[in-house]
Image (cartoon, rainbow, N blue to C red; front, top):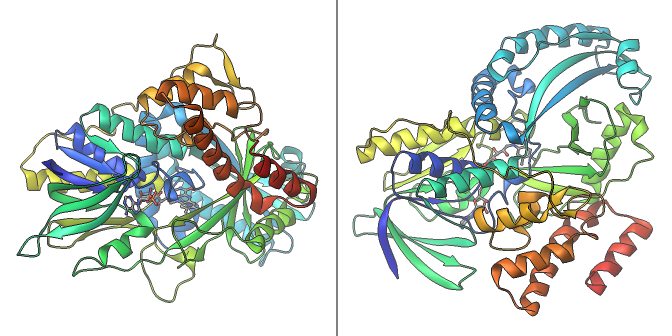
Length: 495
Ligand SMILES: Cc1cc2nc3c(=O)[nH]c(=O)nc-3n(C[C@H](O)[C@H](O)[C@H](O)COP(=O)(O)OP(=O)(O)OC[C@H]3O[C@@H](n4cnc5c(N)ncnc54)[C@H](O)[C@@H]3O)c2cc1C
């Protein structure tokens, strides 16, 4: 079947795709968005979640620092319910190259960053003596010579993506997950007017026509662009994080990894995230492996700055692939984080690069371009219109005790947040992300899902198994010994 009713089709349900869909729909542009998995399954749900200027970009990419800080200020206004403040320490070690000189240099550097702080409601830095830093963060290495503070904000990037998708739908866009783009269909003048995709839920191919097509498939974008006469190049960067089920530190730490690269030690809710690696990656984008030596690199790096990590055991890990723009000869972490809009000159635009922290600005730029082509004058509202979300009633029946998820929250999400599979509730409500890994709540949650979706017991079990497999994939890389054996047994028994 062919549907002719769209002005624009967006391929890719990461933060950039859904951000563009929301802006387009709010301006009255008839929009269809397709995503091949659930939303945020790519980089947008597997990042560090900082909506910061990126202090290290200040060295070589001031434009990115400024635009990220400005957009972070807007994102904070529309998504206050998804934010948390992260006060950071930047400790300097005796063994760091330059020692005392580095500490002085760091302060000058952080002073430069202070100029951008008001844009994103951040506080100016403070210099700490060794004793002050150790009093605030006793787990730090005794070999530090001092520290500088830094004030940042982090966000639930999975929910930020989902809520953009939900708001796009509320504004009239058609938003469909589990629909995989397969090919462009060109007319006799090589113009792309139509695309074909496969709907994995209804198990059928569909063809849809639009005046303009947007390729917002992040790291997948370059291979999709090879279907056109004007392909572009990326340098995809793989980033792994290790997650501990506890708060280990009082503050976030910006630390040097064992090879001198920058890494975060980040309190996130009641958990701790450590990462990220940043390595060129040209493997399978749908299932990037998490390697033993990547986990060891992260933990060893954390240990050198924060030796008190030793008694703790991580419980899972995750991986995302950055859609970084191609540049030759640079180290991965020095690549620009600017974004690029490629006009293929045949009805297709590709958007790539950028950051979570500046997705709204990128979306506005792309929508301005489309609005002009379509002769639409409605102004952008995405910087002031609040994102939708669940507002809990405190007296509700709890399904998950680790993450405080209520039956009402799960039901609300299933009914209003474009949930197709049980596993979609993992990102939307943190289901099975707590310390018990879902042991207490998964069965009950699957019953609620089955009732809402009218599933028979066999389908309910399939959904449960699919979710457990997803959890196992994230847990296995960090488990060893008896814990790994228990996970294997649990998987074998289908518990
Ligand atoms: C490890 C890591 C840490 C990061 N930390 C930060 C940070 O702290 N702060 C920050 O600002 N930025 C950060 N970033 C960058 C940020 O996450 C990305 O710039 C942003 O998420 C890119 O969004 P996107 O929508 O372009 O790509 P993605 O989120 O990757 O979305 C692309 C989507 O396209 C879909 N797709 C692919 N092929 C098809 C197809 N054939 N049909 C339909 N859909 C398809 C994919 O499934 C995917 O969902 C980080 C990135 C990584 C990887």
